[in-house]
Amino acid sequence: MKFVFDTGASVVSLSKTMAEYLLENDYISKDDILEDVKTTIADGSIVNNTKLLLKDIEIAGLHLYNVSAVISGSQNAPLLLGQSAIQKLGPIEITGNILTIKNINFEI
Image (cartoon, rainbow, N blue to C red; front, side, top):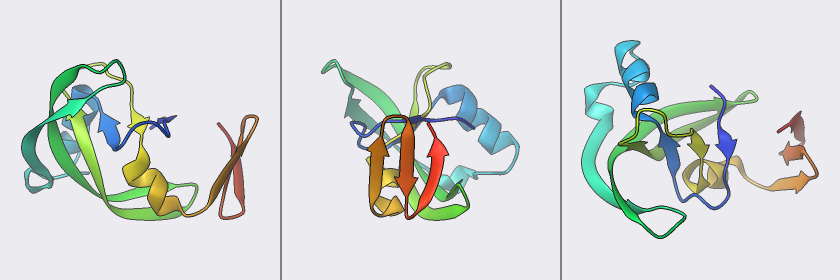
């Protein structure tokens, strides 16, 4: 999956479509889907989402465990890699279109 690396997002955000795909293909279970929550989006609006626990996210060979996420009420919301995952990456540096994570470089 391709995510937008969003340093301004507090948590990882999945579209409803992506969450359904993950559930149908056993990447997540119903037990990983927690409670309904209200979140504030970039324009200041408050929206309803569903809290989710992602047990394992792999990024460039790095595994991030127990990452908080939300499922957007929108079928086609963008996939956002927010601070709940970014903080687990350790030190990062963004120079132009190069993201450096613990000495791993790749194009963003």
